[in-house]
Length: 107
Length: 121
Image (tube, rainbow over all chains, first blue to last red; front, side, top):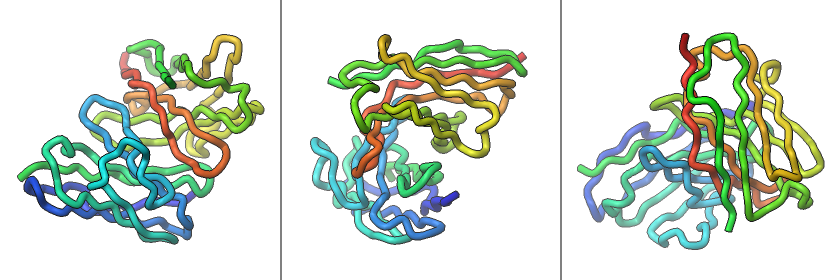
């Protein structure tokens, strides 16, 4: 099974800051990496698919990059409504696995 | 508009069988390429994929729980059902169903709101 390692596990930043989360796969997953946002008590919401494609309706301050085994998720200018836990997830093979999550807080 | 909703018992005793139902609308599991997966989340922990059922009745399970899980579908009722046998307190968590495609691009684009299951005597 492919393992996904996310870092950091938690992050505190100020409104307006640029925030970056990384996700590393235990083997090559090509482009098959998605990013989700989960707010407390809610289901995850798809933000980015295939490493860098923005889901329609998602603000453009969210972006993703990478391929192979190393991926990056960026919020260009943090907003208060971005407070959530973010998960990467590969879909290259079964079972599709999620990272451990990054909890984002406002400083 | 695509919607999914999970239902099932809130409390289950250890060693019992848990049955969860995902009722959905806005798509059909008779459509080529359509899939529904079950994903769970223990309290305060990460998401864990459990099982998937495809439009052609293909079924896939996480190896870790494969012997305890059964996934099925009722296309006339637009439902996907997950059963888990011999539950344990570690199975406590929120269980989600989510829609996705069997074809590229692969992602969970619609989720239910989740149902919290507690395993306790």
